[in-house]
Length: 203
Image (tube, rainbow, N blue to C red; front, side, top):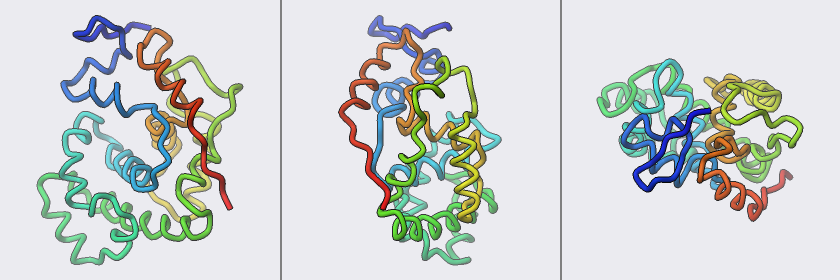
């Protein structure tokens, strides 16, 4: 698999060089394990907004999304009403798609329930961390058995815009799998972070 050689001379995943904002995101966020519920909710929300679009578009708009959606505090978003939907539909800084906006509000309410039932969103999501036997050659898959199972369970609990491809991209980004290419200089850093990471447990 081709690599992108960054200005520092070290190889990265090829996609890291395809947009100006991608290198920093690749080096400091993508694939590193996350246990913060707000960040997990933000990411799965943004992955839903990305459906049919590019991550470049969503990443560029991320500051505006954060401002529009109460910094992805799902407890606050769960209280949004139709007036908030109208406000968001008028916000030119974000993707103005009624279905996706309503899905984030719906999912925030589901997240509140999940937090109460599981102890945290992190405890729930990390219970779907794939085992070694499931890990494919990096960046050769867009879904996996675990992402199919996660998607199915989220939908059963009432979440929307959480298909298996969205779930897989979420798992890649939040560190449930290390999908950096084998030649990428960030892969061992993610591997070390995963070794030190203690996944929260469900109740």
